[in-house]
Image (cartoon, rainbow, N blue to C red; front, side, top):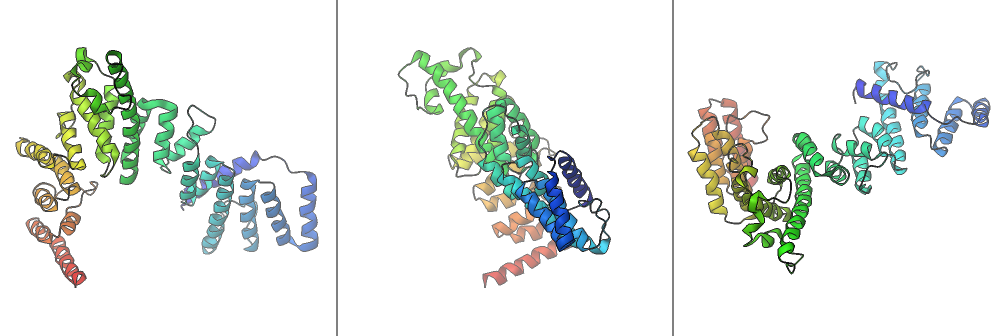
Length: 413
């Protein structure tokens, strides 16, 4: 917890306190009487009890801080601030700050006030209870007061991105959701990216299948209403005549791209494959190229998804091997190799993954999630790691590889 976060939280608490409903005079008199009869600590305890009963949780936070500062003989004019706390007492007061913020946040959550609860739980870095409350929150089908704040906390604050995407899909539609997901995707964990991708695939597949079904039923009213997208397309090339399409083609390419984050087993991979197959039938002007090795966007994604699904794995992997072998620009080869190594790892072909990575991916920056050393350890190929470290004249890396080999031998015993 840093000083800026503390200051921001304290200022917000003060703002809320200014808006608090005025206490009746009798309450003030009771506090004064308690101080006279039982002393100042009892008066503060009475204050805390009253604020809990009145559900004035922002004031309650202040009151708990007031008590601790009084006990330590610190200034009381600004009970929520830590700026007037000497360094030797700061840890003590911070502990009370955390406890008071936790209590206020949890009490606000119990009342369903997620935005104000997050104000406290964010500063003490305890998002889990907020995420659980957001999970329980029904998804609004249109704009509702307060829903925008919850969506922002879920998605942009990273508390529950999947629920945030679900809320955005329901209230703002596919276009805005895809744009937003593209913007935040790099901030999400692999698990969050995977779940968001699964949600987007299910949503767009449903829209696309329904649109194609309506088109087919115009000619063939007896077509089964529960037919899959692949079944609806089979033998019906007329569906695409005249450059026809059934869903925004930019949405289609974006969601198929998102699907690369999904791990098997997942039914959404099959749905994404069917969407990629649909996309491959579109007029060429509606098929947008991407970076290598996805220049031929839909054929490349069909091959990629088939590997993840365990379908036609050898020819699908060969597609990407050929892309790498035939790439004339040496500077582009690491990008192609990265995709191939990812697929090899995800299809449990670790030896080949090590060999390809050793050739192309040993000089990647630290901002890339791939680790050649971790791959070698997982594959049991520390010999390859030692060789590469020698070639790079990296004595530390070479020694680390030797030590890992020794650790593995000890573990095996």
